[in-house]
Length: 190
Image (tube, rainbow, N blue to C red):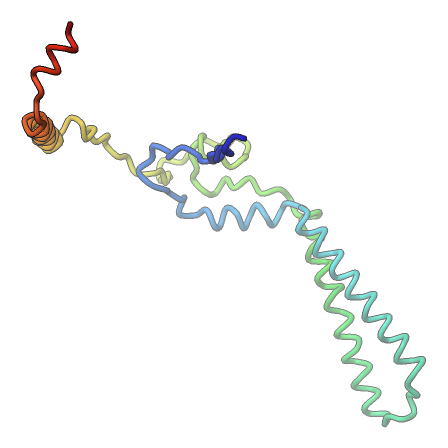
């Protein structure tokens, strides 16, 4: 019977060679404006939830009409209840209308936000047809100079030489501390 082998994690991603993360200063605005003109699964889900809310409300109204006699309430209460019920039913219709707005809005090309050609490509935008204005200031990540590796530093060389010296001393000390049986060495050589 063999011992089970422990599996190693294969999904560990390598550490990127990056000095950090950078976000475009207007990325939140860009995302908001793109979402305003994109009809997505989020919009479909929002419409479905509001249709379900309307069906539940109408079911509740039908049950109330079957079980409750309207004459048990005063006419002013029924009047205000009717308008309150209308307002409550209006909310899902407004939500459905807002969810359908991306279908009728024109696509925003974000040409008023200064983006480099690479940034536009990364965001999935079409290349800008208008040339950049002279006063346009592109926001780009800061440039970092490459730092030399630690292996080339003076401190690393000093630590490495001290480490080698320490290891040599320990090996020499262990070798000298061992009892040497010269006769056994000679017999083993024969």
